[in-house]
Image 1: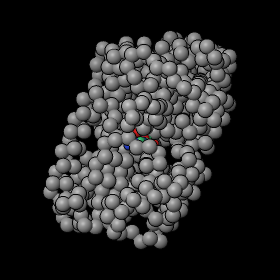
Image 2: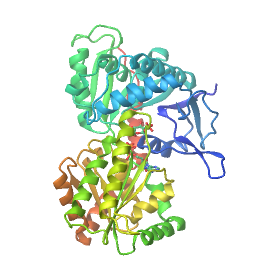
Image 3: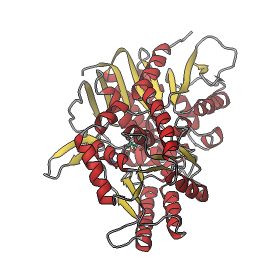
Length: 481
Ligand code: ADP
Ligand code: G6P
């Protein structure tokens, strides 16, 4: 087995298999913030990515991507149910997103979550060279840092959570809270999107583990099975560094796409097909209940009902790529959204002039860039989101200083893109007003906002994120006294 000095461990590999129109199987970048963000920085770094290809059963053989080696993990049908659809996506995902849907606590899922985490840790231990850096990603693999520390005390371990970390009173509901906290704190550096998350973890570490928790470091007992440490012990203690590292996008990739003739022509064609004189409202999401798609449809539909927006002047494009379709909550959401889109089109559309274009399909990067260029108002309204890279992609995709970004206050991106039209998506009247405000905004105001947001993401792109995290991780090499 070839080993690497940098190992990334994430539930999903950055590739999805896709059947091309001619029937051939091809690999395509998987939708979702984590895969997109890491794909950009790892393509040119000698590293190994341990993850799942999305196929059930035996792991497929996968080609390297540039200098990046892929180490596919097999996932059985039972593991898929207990680990991925169950504990990760029906317990942790809703709980970590402010319980906007009720988390399910099913005692049967835990053992599978733990055993799959162990298999990922073993695979990472196998491909990490002595003293390697291992960077574990996201809520699916929260036990891996501690498991890996026990297997390979020589490696330096980072953990990054792409989703929000909930307030202590929500985390405390988790039946396996202690194991999950210890698992994550097995890392040398635990990174989050927002500083509040580090604060929440520090509070929990003090409460549940008797650790000394500050917002940038947690001092705790080195032994994972030891009883809670007393505050004054100095021997056998570990320091776990924590901090906020807001994830970003590959701004250079988006710029080079913008300049491609295909993208420019495609954007022109889209504008013509949507109606040359029409203002375009665009949303691009994984079809997920955290994204606030239903709130946004309600706001748009009421604007049409009240005659404040007319189908002859405005059109909405909702891209909603299928996601986690075997999880009950997601199927129900898709049904509700499709019914509502049908109702809105039935009620307000005209022949050859729908009120909403609904696209339930994956797009490649060039077609997404063309869509972003076509939008007059990008509408990003999650009820809770760790970051939301779509908002940043929209800003990077603009070729000039036009276009407005309507952005939920509950997306991590809102703390950085302060020049967006910020909105509380739970307040449908406020959302309607903000949409009207953005549609009517003065071009000079829009230009000033877009310039400021573009400058921000240019200086804080995905490479800056990886540099900041990996530099800090290097400083956090184990300190055991
Ligand atoms: P999340 O990580 O919750 O899915 P983000 O907004 O952070 O949300 O990231 C979504 C990523 O998925 C973005 O990079 C976006 O471009 C990509 N994406 C969203 N919709 C599609 C689609 N229909 N086809 C391909 N990629 C998509
Ligand atoms: C979010 C999560 C990622 C996940 C992605 C797509 O970005 O933070 O870990 O990969 O959604 O979801 P999926 O379940 O398809 O991997």
